[in-house]
Structures are given as C-alpha cells and as structure tokens.
Length: 170
Image (cartoon, rainbow, N blue to C red):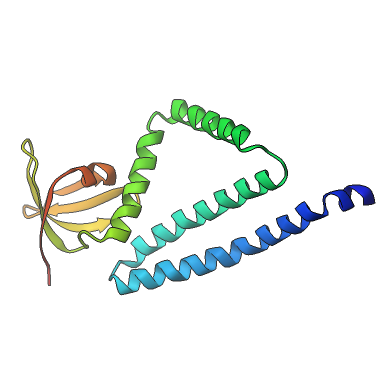
C-alpha cells in the first residue's frame, strides 16, 4: 500500500491541487462574469446563465486534466468523448443544435450586439420581423412584436439573420 502511494505521489499531489483549484476558479470566473454583466448592463438572469455554462466548462476541464494526469491518453479520451456524443446525438437527435444554441448564447452575451429592450428588425425575405427584445437566454431569444405577438428564436438561428437594431426603449 505504501509503495503504491509513493509511486503515485506526484499524481496524488497534482490531483489534489487541481481539485482544490476548481472551486476557486469557479469563484473567480463567476466574479469576472458578474462584473462584466454589470458593466455591460446585462440582466442578472443572462449573467447567471453564463456562470452556469462556465462552471460546466471548468468541471469538464478538471475531469480531462485528471484523466490525462492519471495516464489516459488524449487519443483514447477523444474516442470516448466522441462516442458519448454519438450516443447522445442518436438519443436526442438535436444534440449539435443544442450545443450551437449554447455557443450562440455565449457569443450574444459577450459580443453585445443588442440588449434587452432594443427594437430590432430582422431582415428576412420570407418573414421580416419588427419586434422588441424581451429576453436573451442560453438557448433562445424572446421577442415581442408591436402587435403583441410573442416570438421565440433559437440563438444559433438568430445569429444567422441580418438584424437592424433601433434605440433602447425607455
């Protein structure tokens, strides 16, 4: 037992350090995102969505680092991760669409092309839309037309459209 601990002492110490850094990393990144959210006038809900996404990424990074540290080869991890995504993709059908919507939500949060309350015009030849942005979540953007109709657009589709932004409502 003692020889096993002595042989693996560097991995044990590095694992302890990685595991100890996870909560502090989450805390620091959460503070940075919240500060950015306040400075960029983001809603608290949108900021919390981004904090959750970043926390998931930190957890995933920790798992990958621990696996590499304990001798799992990156090629084997890539095969395992792609197999898991394939199973999820077959099971859920929309797996890549969900990931693209999350990615688009992160892009919308940090790039700030428009804000909640902005009046926009979506330049689409089939269905042009004049609306006010009510909310931007991790997956969808919620709009309200002048006629009171509620429209929900997936963020990945929203980023693909040409959007003209008006002034913010008061």
